[in-house]
Amino acid sequence: MAHVGDSRVYRLRGGTLEQITADHSLVRELLEKGAISAEEAENNPYRHVITRAVGVRPRTVAEVQELEAQPGDVFLLCSDGLTDLVSDAVIEDTLVVAGGNWRCAAQRLIDLANNSGGRDNISVVIAALGGPC
Amino acid sequence: MPKLVHSREGRFLEDIPLSEGSWLIGRRPECDIRVDDETISGKHAKITVVPSAYMEGLLDVHIEDQGSTNGTTVNGKVIKRHMLKHGEVAKIGSHEFALVDEATRGFETTTVVLPD
Image 1 (cartoon, rainbow over the protein chains, first blue to last red):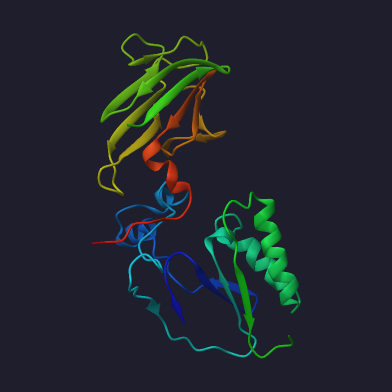
Image 2 (cartoon, rainbow over the protein chains, first blue to last red):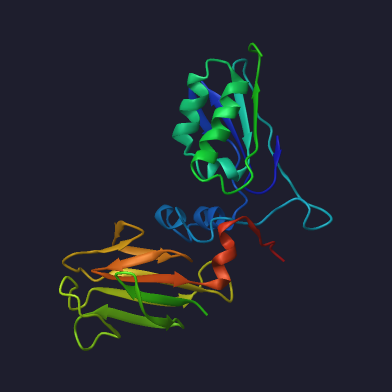
């Protein structure tokens, strides 16, 4: 799994959603270093500043991770257009109640983001392992 | 340079340009920004402007309630200490202070800043 910037990968396993990627953002990096507190990071004016992106320089270094996936795992790949407007808790609920209807879940997530302002482009990909399509 | 747009009940009062430093807001004469609303405390809130902790060349604008009787809100939420962003409005009694900061205005959407 590789990522660049503040687009994220989440994994739903056993009804629990977990963010797998760490945002390449200024605020998250400062938070990790202990330079700012969690409270200062939330709703921070600089929270959209990212430190890696594709297409700005000729070469980009992606962060690559290897994970073990289990049957039943569901992966959500999304842009910050979703996660900026819809909380992790709501995303988790939406995926859990979808009952395996992922196309519907993806549309629902996009609708939720649009209903909350829909300021940015919203991209959602749901990959479900070893389940019905 | 960031500025605060000071208004009262929808009526524009003044622009306050912000450079590094601090401004005390309240009813007492020693306050830098004096306001005459009775619901405002003598020393109600303080605006502090410092070189940005996040990005060189920019300024961070903080507002901190000074233990006022009726509190200070930002965008409707009561705060103790808050870092203002472009467009946010701090409310003190019937007075409003909106931050206008052209430098960080673009930061509402994704901005790429690559390390050297």
